[in-house]
Image (cartoon, rainbow, N blue to C red):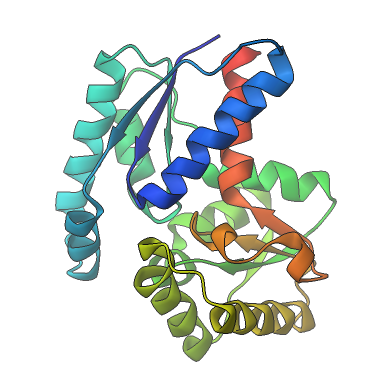
Length: 230
């Protein structure tokens, strides 16, 4: 089994889910008392969130590179970034290390293509929905068309992530808002919807909507396990 490196803490609530899913998947695949060999470097999300909203992406890139290099020195054989938004600097991080970085959009794209879908909706932080580092990769590398919510809906999604989900707050009113936005994306032609923020699956589950959902936290964690044990 390869040793999985995780850059976590963004937020710790979703990193906890990564750790749980990774170990449950290893146990399911290998049986017995097996669990994952892994190394996690967990950041202080307060610092990260402030830098994100100040637009200090170069500083954030250096932080992420430092995390990745520390994980590599600790003996990891591969790295995953336990958040969608911070894949904004995935290429810079990958070029700074000598082990593979498993991109969350690539893992998600494989699941989407496995369903035969060509057009999907994308939920996430405003950074993820508005910029091209994520949806551009789906379009250019995987030929998947991406629909995003309107500006008002994007702000609602973004605010709930940072003001509630990252603080561990789960509100029924927020779930209803997300469900309405997902339905709107389906009406625009989305065959499925990507939960493109690792906190969103804390709020929305597949049983909440009829539209197929792609839980990027679970997809990414299971993808890492498959790579580690193949």
